[in-house]
Length: 602
Image (tube, rainbow, N blue to C red):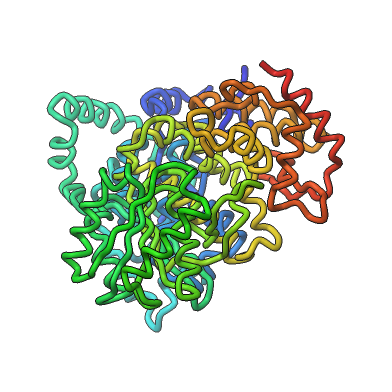
């Protein structure tokens, strides 16, 4: 019999094959995850591992995934360096990703179930099982370890008692309860299986009745704490750059509150809002009103939409308009729009009065996950894209996912290409998450917030280590050496090719070039291409309408790439999904031969 697989990893043969109760539980799960919740010391990891073997499912420990995502920092180290709030934000995003991976047994940290957004996602994708241990049992177990950051107090017993008392009402919201007793672990697994076998059919009946009455209303009745859904969903990613550090705030309803956020960092400041004609029609009145309500004076500067606005002539005109508005160095330039507006406004802010503060309010998926973060600003030259510019960090980024509703599907897809990039360059688990359920990112705001936050977190980590692209920051240009060449040869004509489409083709080309050089398995490149095609993105040069240029023209365009060093080409290539690296001094003849073969693809 073929063994089940999870994210391409072969799992052990299920013991469930000879266990009727385990088989019944697997069938009743209907593709959902089993999510173990409860206090530290309740046995979630130990019981979860054995339960997973009995069911023939993969076991995942959320805390272990968080440690892996933090490059091996332990949880106490994360708490000590960044604080509990930072840890909880990362924990929530990890759990959201893991729940999209299909049926698993997932052990969560003691505080994970306290977050209403995490509870909502568990309710959608899984079955929550509370391992309920009393204080005496918990104390006996947690005293064996000293890796519990919340218990590093003068009186750990009293701290644990207070935590249990505060958390119990929220744990009681779990779908099922199992008493965690001081018995052999296999006996606890038997108890858990018995509760699952008895409880899952009733839960399924409740869910079906809830859907027939109206899901939202019924779930509020069944789970009163979920009435907290009126609270805004929000994630905060910190870009750590010492005195120039700033927050990226990701959520919904941020345009309406932009004035409050901006007033916090610059009370009483004047603002010059730079936007384009399309965004002005959709979102400018909301931002203007928000600034006015916060007591901030605002002047608006509107440019034509499209790549043509990233030019010396438009840049000069906008600089003059900002000066005419009497914007001083401690005032703010506000970039309201997509990547073009953000790059242009950022370069204006870097230049006016030798450097003014600015705020990014990106309104496209591409700008939210890429161009608004990291301080790269610039305009285009006739010699190539973004060749005139400066590194100038924003003071704040507000990424409102409500604005994504106004995007044409083509523009959303183009932004999604940059989201995929983050998984391909260094986070295979993120790519697995996207590959498992890309539709969720296209249709669910909660998933969009998570995808934007993970993308920004990845970029923020790299930028903090290499702000001015002297080393690993070049990894963020995966697919761009090819993509920028394609954009240049189409004269930046968005009717033929938009940036994200060029990046999608470029990533597929880079993956295939990696295979050609013996660096990467062909199956990985095929998976990249299949995923991009699956969401409607182009993956071949001839997917670009009316393409007529030859391989030499593409190679010549590549020599204007910013990563060229002393006339030698640099590419970002793959050793596998999530394993990108910088390949310097790549032979031009090798590239030319590859491009000739690529042009034969139809």
